[in-house]
Length: 417
Image (cartoon, rainbow, N blue to C red):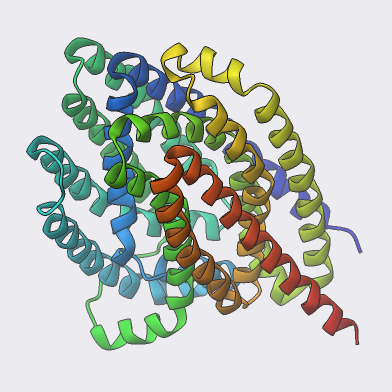
């Protein structure tokens, strides 16, 4: 059986919205990074990267997987939305406040200047709204509608590029630039809430801890997956800043920024396919297998192509985007290029396992890899600096790919007998 025409059209439409938004967002986002890099140099880029990666890494208590669980359940049965949403929202609000207090408490002990600590607290305050707004993003995804999130991202990136760029040009300082960005983020979150709420009959919020316990029992695997994924995607930048200098962090961030350009591809595939995978797991597993295989083949080809392009054009890309001051980023970019195929596939493997009820398996895989990645980063960063962080990223991503593929392959073989 082949995929139904209606499913194909829906996936293509959703992918088209996200692709358009991601192209615009990435172009404007990288424009912001380029302006920042050429205005404040590697040290300024390193400080900027540390602030946002640090807040992101400490956002570990902001969700506990309830947003993702809500998306999966609503994708399977739309009637569950009004039943689950009030408790999910109440829980998310409490978690956002608690997580902000954690960020404030830890930030006071950072070996960073006071101005940077103040900016971190401001970023953490805005993050509370972002964490809550993700509930509404997942509601739109559960209804297999992606255009609203696409527009919200594009609006924020336009703000960051034009308003943020003007502020940076006028003040040539990191603090006012980040404050301008936070205004754009706030606009994005408000749009997410507004558009996501359209799918809700009556917006209610409940604060019932006894129900939260029940939610946690079902959602915690998704939280652990997100936590472990966050660790091996964010720990390199934070550890670099704490173990080395801001300059080296900036050099690494420049290389990683170019790698991030390509990550919108698996992001589009996964965001459009995951709700359909969750529904097809219940309705039509033969079509689900076709969808997975086609996504797998596409991501393998694109990942290998990305590796080749990054390795060959690393020097040219760094020179064009960041300038000669960032030439030390070239060998780092060539190392990171080898992680691209794994990054593409890991997004698919994780979403497929989550959609088909194997979230605990993927939790174990990401948990092992995250802990291994922290240890590997520590020793390699101390020994080799940014190059060591790049090697740790390649190895960690590769391990996740191998373990996930082996697990899925063994599962398929068992089902044949």
